[in-house]
Image 1 (cartoon, rainbow, N blue to C red):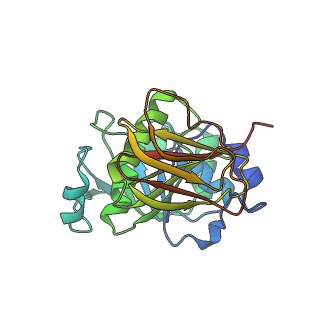
Image 2 (image 1 turned 135 degrees about the vertical axis):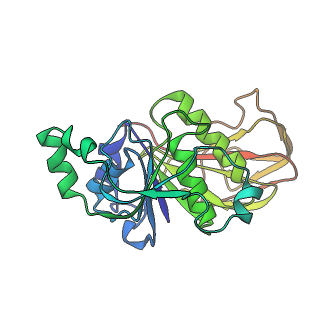
Length: 263
């Protein structure tokens, strides 16, 4: 499934989609959640949105079945215990006054967008971002393989917050962020195979704590039983030399970033 987030790299996403092995076949997604302005990305990519999520301060709120939630952050453990619709705590109908305030251009965009099966309205003042709420909703609905388009190329506070979301779910779900330049995920201890996926560089960053017992094979720079600390750049700008690199470590959380130079 896919969660769409706000991104400054929208044109890059559209240009490279489906054109090389660094990207994905969007037709393969079986469920799409758009986080606020993520609906703009979905429209460009031709994706049908199943659920809209957000406070809609940066995009037009579409019409559909409206549900409201309180906008509170939750732990993975709490989300695992939830019923499929606990986030959707109430229903209402679209406010006609909201539609009357739209400009002619906004009405045209709204009319082009297919009616979503569900719209989750978040309050403007809340404990979490629209992106985290969308990923929480995806996890609550049972998805464990989640791609996020955007979310890592705009404001640095949002980008760092999204790295925190990776940490929240590491070992519980496979979450990957894309922006057309970077592919970012987080690994738990164990042995992992990392493919180049058409990207030139592979960066490894210890997240919040030491990564202990790190061994890298199949890369330009290899190490054995190494401790990678979060206050150093030792793992940046490596390169996979074959079909994949093998990464093993015993302790910690490891950010893996496949990236390419900006053309």
